[in-house]
Length: 256
Ligand code: 13P
Image (cartoon, rainbow, N blue to C red; front, top):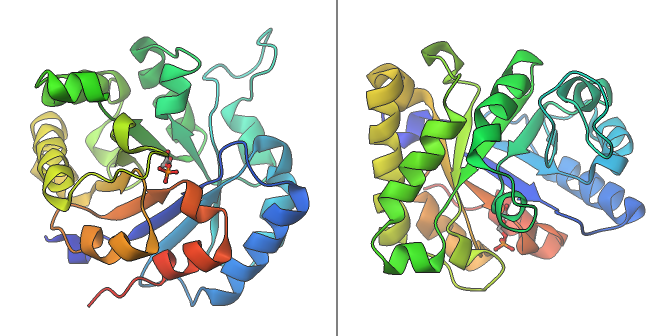
């Protein structure tokens, strides 16, 4: 199975940007440009406070809507946190887990990742599990080791039958919001390593089903080139997902 048989997955991570009306405007524009959703999967990850409104506007289209984080417990004294069932209740169908900003700004440890991914899967949310090395780790030749450690943590409770629902996002920390994109060769090498890791962990079949997407300074002018690589199955877009004139061309990248 080549990446042509894994449905391309283009996702926008809005982070703590856009106000409510701008979120809704973006959803309306994206919705108007999506076809039946058969040839590519498109989703936006919105601030949790706007999710109910965003999912209401997205309804009736193939656009996926997700939260940017979750906590793995069902309920309890966890001030400020949002449970998987709460995301589900406001209409989200997916969630980001372990984004580098969660790891580095908010110091989320590896130990939480397996439970977060499992909580998402158990509540019918499609997780995108994010991994990626810092520039120091890359310069110290520790990229593979760091990513395998992150994969070990996030896949702790993942089973082969979850493969069609979980996505891995490779987001090199040094390429996020910096304008510095990993070269296609750099990204493709890590994606290949991740797929091999999944094959060893969950088996060949699961590794061919699981999508591995790239994030880090994706722009309209590098989307097609990245998507042409064998093991790159999609794009997780930050800055360029905040405006229609940059996000729409990425969604509509020419797959030929
Ligand atoms: P940028 O596209 O702004 O580099 O952000 C990438 C990212 O973190 C997506 O999750």
